[in-house]
Length: 158
Image (cartoon, rainbow, N blue to C red; front, side, top):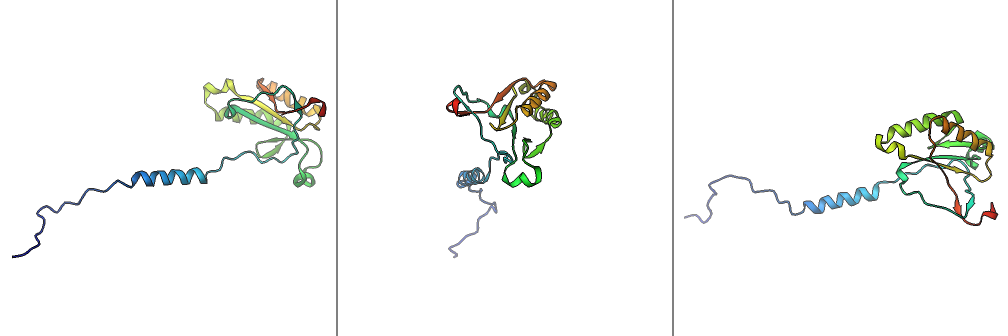
C-alpha cells in the first residue's frame, strides 16, 4: 500500500518560455545603451561661417564630409599651422579626395549613389585656394552635388 506511484511515461516536461520576452528586451536595451554612434574626431579647428539662409540636410547617411582648416592644438606640432584637409579620421592631401569619394560611393548601394552629397565643412579662416582645389578634385570624379556647412547667424560677423 504505497501512497506514491511512479508515472508510467518518463517524458520531460515542456520548457517554460514565459520569461523569454523579458530576456530579449533586456538584451535589446543593453545593446542600445552600449552601442556608440561614432562621429569623426575633428583634428582641425572648425569655426563655421555665419549664413542667413540655412537649410538642413535631410538624409545624413547620404552625405560625405570633407573638413578643412588649421590643425587643432594637439596636432600643430606635427602638422604645422597651414590649413589642411581631413577625410574621416586622418589628414589627407588634395589628391586623395578622388579615392575618398570612390570609397564612399562603393560603400553605398548602387541606386543611392546619384543622391550622395559632398558637404564641405570649411573653417572661416581657411584659404579659399584650398577650397578651390577641393572643388577641382570633386569635379574630376563627377561629385557635383556640394553643400557648404554654415551656422545660422548674422552674415556681417564673418
